[in-house]
Length: 206
Image (cartoon, rainbow, N blue to C red):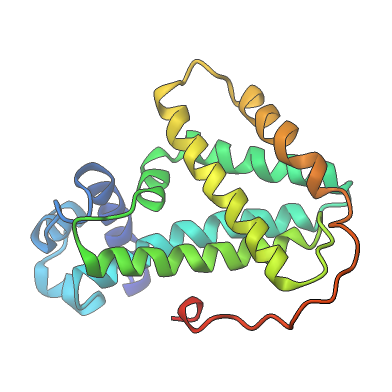
């Protein structure tokens, strides 16, 4: 097994463990055992549990954003691309429930892990803001970022609600989101206004 294959195996095992026990409920010994590697080998790849946790989070986040990029490049109308992106998100939640659980659940019992979770989430918001340019012509980056945060938080909350209400089918769930948000995003952002230039706060770059 190559180092890359072993690393991927560790991440898959860690994802399953974090989904079941949460960040605080999982040890390095348990991750090593689940991955079928020795603890020294595990530490060769990841110096700490935090490093594994961040790698897992970033992997899930980047997979979702990659789907969004692919959809944004499709030769379709803004409304069709928005609907496709929403459907892709909920399909991922449906097909990869463990990955979704780790990405959506903040590890509140551990301040260090929670801080890194929020950092990964800020990266997700920036990625969504960049994708919004394909369907919503906001006139400044701050508006794109605000809209991205609103959409991301709403999708996350609805995904968690869906777990408790699985009787609502995927198409109906997408209809809810598109009906509430989609129309506004495909319209102009509003009349031009003179606003100060937006600078990314230092907190968003950490």
